[in-house]
Amino acid sequence: MKRLVIGAGRKAAKPVRWREGSRPGTGRSGFKRMYSRFVTLRIRPAGREVRQSVDGPEPPECWLLAEWPADQAEPVQFWLFDLPADTPLTTLVRLAKIRWRIEHDYREMKQALGLAYFEGRTWNGWHHHVTLGSVAHAFCTLQRLARAPPRHHAGLSLYRIVRELQTFLATWTGVCPTCHCGIPTPAPT
Image (cartoon, rainbow, N blue to C red; front, side, top):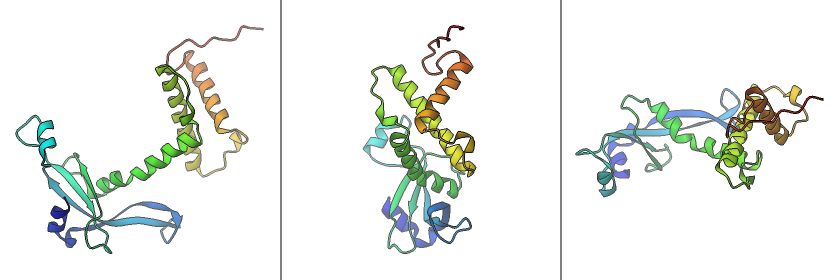
């Protein structure tokens, strides 16, 4: 892959900015702009493993995306995409660079929301745990994006938020949204 990109030349590399960084910088929002130069080529993958996994006479074309920063003598990272031929370069770069965000969110879910603390033994229990953790993460992300202090939720821990969401979902439907078990209703007093 590297030889293909080097063969295309440094002039084939186009600058792309994919997001604002998390550190202070000179961008419009006050954060460092994340950008680099990228080369794209349409290729047909080769190799024994590729040939064995393809049903037709030859594998379909795919995108080869290579990051080639201006201060580097050769490309530094490579990605293959099976997206359509008319996919814009900015979309390819954004998808390639989203890995950091996914890893950050997963680490946050494991540490802050307790995703790693499941000790059950059933599929339904695990699915229930992961679903509530994902909903809690979505809630926290929306609160963070609102940029307003969550005054009406002040004093709620993440554990309490998960419990509140679980109670809301159960009372709204009358059954657990994950395992579809009936939720017992309290006896009238």
